[in-house]
Image (tube, rainbow, N blue to C red; front, side):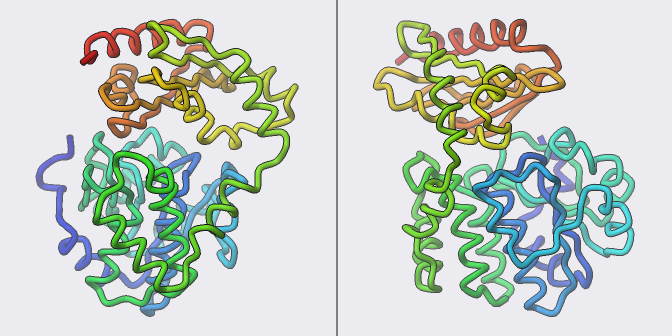
Amino acid sequence: MCAKHANTDMQGMAERIAGAERMVVVTHIHPDGDALGSMVALARAARAAGKTADVVAGDDIARRYRFLLEGESPLGFEQFRSAAERADTVVVIDTCSSAQLAPLADQLKKQTDKVLVIDHHQNCEPIGSLQWVEPDAAAVGVMIYEMLKSLDWSVDATTAEALAAAALSDTGWMRFSNTDGRCLRAVADWMDAGVRPDRLYRKIYQADRPERLRLLMRMLNALELRAEGRLAASVLWKADFVVSGATENETEDLVNEPMRLRDVEISALVIETDNGSRVSLRSREFVDVAEVARRFGGGGHARAAGLRSDEPPNKFAKKLFAACEKAIKAAAP
């Protein structure tokens, strides 16, 4: 858990953000919609308020989210060091994990005093001098929006769309159990600002390449149902990417597909990488998959979590699937 002295509430974070003159906003590797949308929205609102604000992004941005960076000139990871040294504030979005900030972690440790963290995940390392963490928040995008309102900073239509992409993608377009009234009220405000959720949905989820669909077909063809159909276990190998023509950043949400099956409680997807395995976990109602992920050095939310292992899938998947089956058995109502 976070060190107590590092924790703060929205007001404490708002005061530090308001006092910043030159900031750099960063997020985790393989950023999702919440991470990118929140990062971009904060930077744009800060510029509108007269601040200097840079965003940092690697080359691993999923195709479906690249529109969020239109109009931006993101710095690469290799430019972060000099940018952070010039800035008086570095804001880390949507993570409290050094492992998820691997390309930037060493530099962040050298400048902890100027690092602020805004996150909503259960796992929390004390990586910043001030950390505002709300695991109950549906998305960091909701938190950012509430802070911007408290600061009376402008939220134009483009910024509202980035925030909507953050919150709507992290709640499964308001289908997941993390959706609450707080999130819905924010979405209503963004719609009043001109956001069209139907158009935004098409931008994100209905603009895939055929290669991604072919990858999904390969995953489903190899799907295993275990634990009397309550565990959907999937592995994607490098060969699947070669045959389908898909890329690793086109795997987001594939793990959700087996949740269409009535009896599935956990969907577990293991993806072979150059350095081992990457894992996505989802659960329906009873199992805390963040707890399963923590056993292997990962983390996340109760219903959505992830992790990485330096073991290849042929070794690691057996351990992971066994842990999932055990969790299902222990949580069975």
